[in-house]
Length: 315
Image (tube, rainbow, N blue to C red; front, top):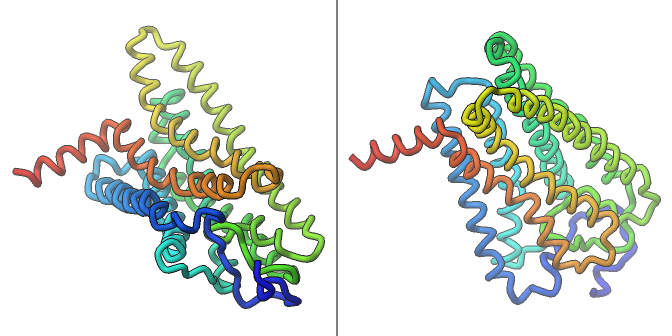
């Protein structure tokens, strides 16, 4: 690390994103799968939005929540990939201090929103399977709109202290972030102050928001499984469970890497830095790519509309 990066400064005008330390020579090659992931996320999520908007039969709570998930995935991936590709292709490592705080806000905000959307989707599956005759009266358009607004407000409000707290700390050791983009813990680790407030608040958000979401989804699926096992025939149980498979797969793609990400960020001092960086990128970029694929393949209505769309264009 050069002497210019270790200096006596407070609130630096820029941070330097290190990229993947030790693999700088392979940055161009590493960019290829990430570029593919971004293109797939853009195409897949835009296709989901287009199909749901075009087909009146899909104007239902499940597909409204799916559209919210697609929008969240588009914003999340777009917050990350352009700057990442600039580092890989142009060696453009500097990021303005305010831009860094803005990026970390949007990354964490839409991650919390995405978790809330999965809870809303679990609620929809619970009502559809456990109370099928009351689904349309319970999840009315007004209720769906209020749930969507609550998900957005929760993400925006709970994450707002992240950039506020990060902007209050003095940064007097280094301005190098050993990642490809700005995250809350990645930035505040550079502060030369007691950052326990930031650490405690970050853990509070992880456990009180994400933890409660996982608890709620677990309770919902326990009730769903109980209802499924009470069905009279094996075929009925299989068909009903099929309606939940895509949601369960999407949950696994975000929460399992997310748990590893949270643990390695705080306690992974012995984990190799390049591996940590790759895991962080997989955590944030795989779900936007995989979600439209999972729902496109596993959701019969979307799959049917997609086949109809392409077959109609081919004739």
